[in-house]
Image 1 (cartoon, rainbow, N blue to C red):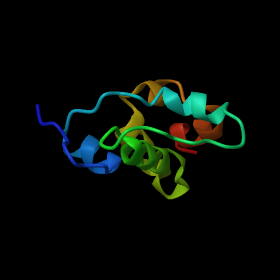
Image 2: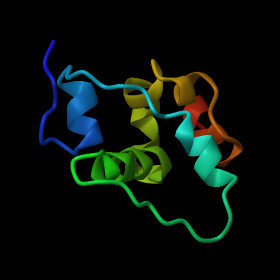
Image 3: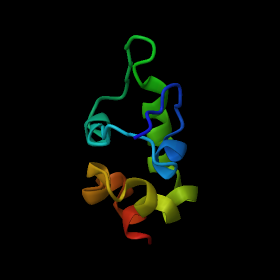
Image 4: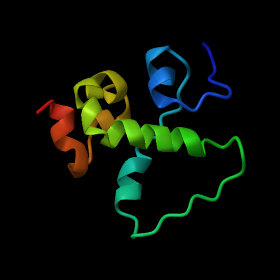
Length: 90
């Protein structure tokens, strides 16, 4: 098992087989949060990786890779309404 120390590219972590602690269930929580969101976490705590995951999740140019990137994660098995169409490949 390889750990992605220093990597913050969600696509690379998933496709290259690095260990990924599934935090994709947070996407639904973020969608239900108010208009403003402030992420206050210590350095090396995964803020950039979270943003990279969100970029890959919402980017319509990557909808054809949704199952590859998210199919095995919690959000891939139960996508949010904002991305339900992309998860079906429509």
